[in-house]
Length: 332
Image (cartoon, rainbow, N blue to C red; front, side, top):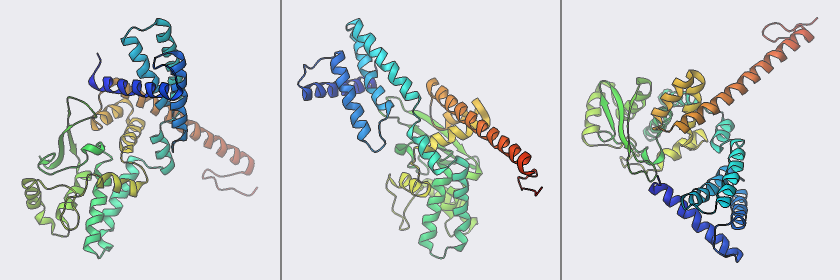
């Protein structure tokens, strides 16, 4: 079945192929020669980008051409040529780690680490004299305290009390329709927030007021449909506010929250962790589940090898220098 999303993507690639042929003075046609030149052009543009050559970009281009050739039942030799080229690019893509994994490795951030940062910001409010600064800190703490376990996409991150954020049975619940890119049917997400995460929302509502006002302010905020995040003057924040603050504090893009959650949960809880993460990340595809499980198996294997290497090193040092169990060297 050809969905509107696939049709649009294929049309875009065919238009790019036509442009490539015209630039080279070649007939606008789908052939082995035109595909070779088009792939070379796509690879060069990717290589010159800030992240260098990404095989996923090149593979996606050939994949659409292959789909088009199969759909129109073009010459079988051309279809086989595109299938072989796609298989080569897929193998190269599998050997190249996704950029988001590199970014997380660079910063060392995990879901738990980001949540610790959120707690640290909230705990440090007592030492801040300026009320405007306290307001901004509460907003920042809530962004770090909620979104790592509710990893919404940028377009869905703008929460409004009484609209997609509700107080139900003594806990905050995110209840919203997730409109994925060009998808006809939005996905209904219902995600309760445990107290350890809901407390950041309460901190925003209470502000500098007494805790006794919390219940009243919850009800009032939902009745007027107040945006969760507002500026110190009460004006709603821009939609770019949440991703921007998250990146400023963590040095990772907002979209890495899904990767962090998948990685942490799968390492700690295996396939059950992956299933939980897929629900939280509003993901359904079996391919996504297999992908994250493979990534986690690879990461776990690396961690085990590193741990084994450290153990061998410790045993070597103990034998060579007479180290005690803690690794402290004992003079022989």
